[in-house]
Length: 425
Image (cartoon, rainbow, N blue to C red; front, side, top):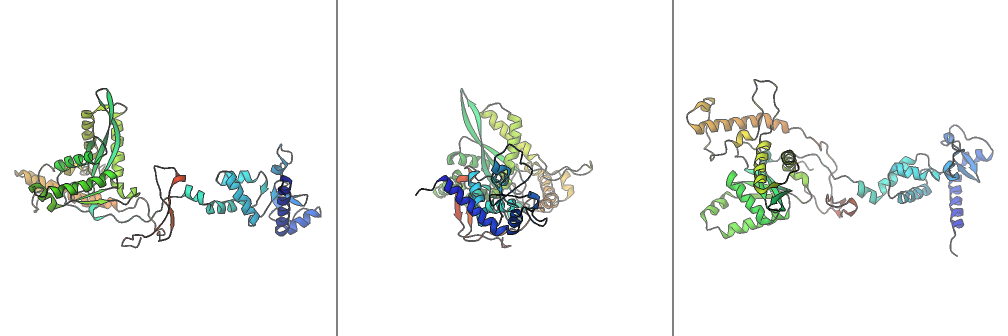
């Protein structure tokens, strides 16, 4: 026989009567005698009533224009199996709603004292909710890498790079897209901007060659795992192998350029240049506003933005007029027009020397002394990720964050191996 609605309702009421008989025997006995429940009972404030051997909430809403089940909901204990099943069903009916949504829906028919605790357990065990509300894994912020705190190297010896945009430019009657390429000096926080015609490998290589021609040889490059960067690194390596008979390329090969790619889906590894992209965008928005530029104007604006960002202070500005002005990347970049001179001992009197190279070298030494004394101490504090968290271990089930996709489509994975730093984190 097929179950009818009456059969389902009868079975539900019988199960509830059985559970109440087990969980509230004293209250049930008092109500059957026509007495009030004891003051020590957890149900005392609910003013419970008996309705067909069911304990319901008496409450204060008996005159409200509401259904009987909402005015006098059935009372259940929070730690019973039937309560967990009802809460799981309510969670499904509310579309995996939050605590308040579930509680409001639950009290249309049932009243569970301490329901918030039981609801929290349901939300914790729900795989879909954990996937939708999970935060990214965190660990105590690592110490700064060597390339961020090494002085006395030429600017842009070690850089991080990334692309940003697009920007619309006019070419005749058509509007085309152009992109920006940012190089960030990891030591002095200076930037260099290039305009790219597209995000393909050829365009990036041309922008990289312009950067090398203007800023000098690079020792180390850090970037994300963009396909244009990976392809560019491969093509550059193949190109230098094919041109290794050329004297210039032999020199470049001897110097070498180390290219380091950040792990996939680890944007926090490139925070030093991602933060400056935000500064560049802010200045670009204030300069360009809503107008569409032509290509020459966009290149000019990029140069102006580069100069503005490089003039920002990287140390605290003092209110004392007798103090030195705040240190900026331009303090060193303005000395970059000549090849680096041999190291030596330079005195303050050299600033008045007739030998121009000694003036330049003294000012460069002064920059690095202030950089060590004023800039580096400002990097001591961790702005976030200050406490040690549990390490991920092999076998952990995780969700891979994808900012370009909705949360409910994020991929679930299992950790196979982990890499620890020297502190075991």
